[in-house]
Length: 396
Ligand SMILES: *Cc1c(COP(=O)(O)O)cnc(C)c1O
Image: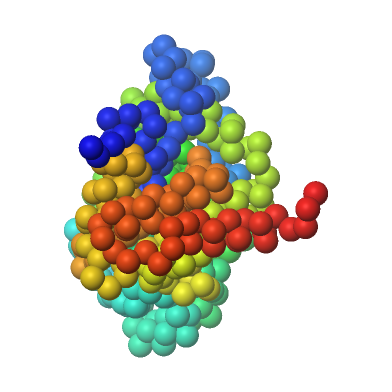
């Protein structure tokens, strides 16, 4: 008889690029009683969370906390920075890049799209050429970590090209699945807007979006003519002076983010980034050893999510079904034009290298169950372990 564990909800391994597993103390924080969101307790929490978010984003500027998913943060960036008729350039290399196209179009921008292949990051040289051919670009929209393909973009290189070729263009970044897992230094890198959310590397449940604007982006917001109300960032900033948000926030998720940021502060940023890179390298080595094909070359490989194509003849959706139903491991499939063609493994936030052994083992076992010729059971697991051993260095 087939043994299945999927009913064990609390043992489920969420290996998807968000929402991500939530630590027990963060779950407990969510169960605290409700408070007045215009009272002194909330004021203290809001100040603390905002300050920690500023540090995480690498900015001296205010970071708005919006109630909504990451897309609300993306929409806020457009609603506050783009006027109808503005020429904008979207760098599109996947589903989330395309979301910028859709949002900017909805706000009446004249949208130029620079597509780049789904297995690489933005080519700075190509960006420079495109900006030279396209004068008058008011904003460049890009994706830090493209979760649909597992590509991490070099934001510094993008901002540098902007400085050289189109200095008036704002660089607007979706770092929903990057912030916390990959280095990001908004002010030092010259980024003008950074958007993120609670449910990825920040290891809290979904429900909050974060938006930071540079000084010149705030100036742009003052004169921009797009309609906005709920997502008016100036209203958020005004109310923040009083220790409040303009509308009732998702108080329980703010509790969660407060606790999660406290946990995050116990790991030095460099260690956190190294842990994410280690998990990435273990997953990549493990899956590759089992015959999966890496979608993305090493230099663009995301530290938070990995996408692979299956060995020839393998039905990815069947692998995902077995992993879920028989092993309680949740993998993602492909989105958009990659639907049904790839497997995506999330490795961000509340995750450890040992979790990656589980993930590789689950993918390997599920692959074998679908009848694929796995050359030797444990091969992927051994490869992932080898990466861990090598990275940990010599014996203590
Ligand atoms: C998760 C994610 C988003 C936001 O999606 P929501 O479902 O609105 O939270 C945006 N961009 C990227 C790259 C993401 O991974």
